[in-house]
Image 1 (tube, rainbow, N blue to C red):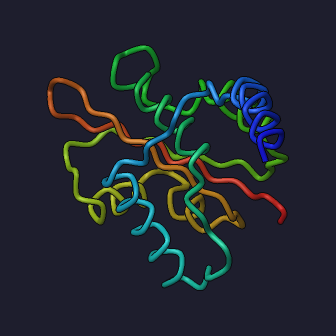
Image 2: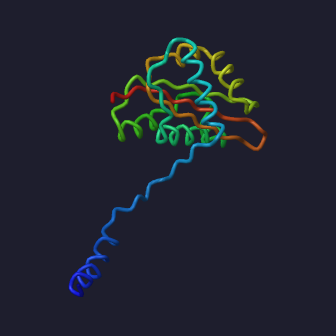
Image 3: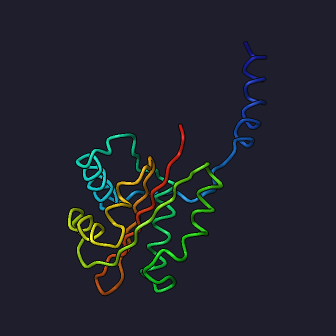
Length: 157
C-alpha cells in the first residue's frame, strides 16, 4: 500500500506539469449576439432554410474582432478587410461558401437589426445562402452606434 502511494505521489507532478495549457483567447458570446443569431435563424427557418445552422464560437470570435475594428475606426464599415479573418477561420477548419454582412446601426434590438441587414444589397440572398455556420459579432462606440458583423459559411460534418 505504501509503495502505491509513493508511486502515485511521484507521478502526480508529471501529470500536473505535462498538461497542455490552452493559452488562446476565450470567446464569450454576448447576449445580444446570440439574440441576433436566433433572429437570423428564425428568418431562415421561415423562408425554408431549416437545415443545420449553428452559432460557432470561434466564428463569433472573428466577427467580434471585425466589429471591434469597425467600432474603433480601424476598419471602414464594409467587408473589404475580412480576408485575414477568413484565413484565420480556414486554419481551424475547412470552411467554404463564405459570406458576410456588416452594419452600423443605432438600434440594439435583434429583430430591427435583422430587418436592417435585409435592406442591405444582397442582404436577403446572403442570409438565405447554403451555409451551416454563423458568427455574429457586436461592438459599440462612444456615440451609441452598434457595429454588427455576420459571418456565414459552410462546413461539412
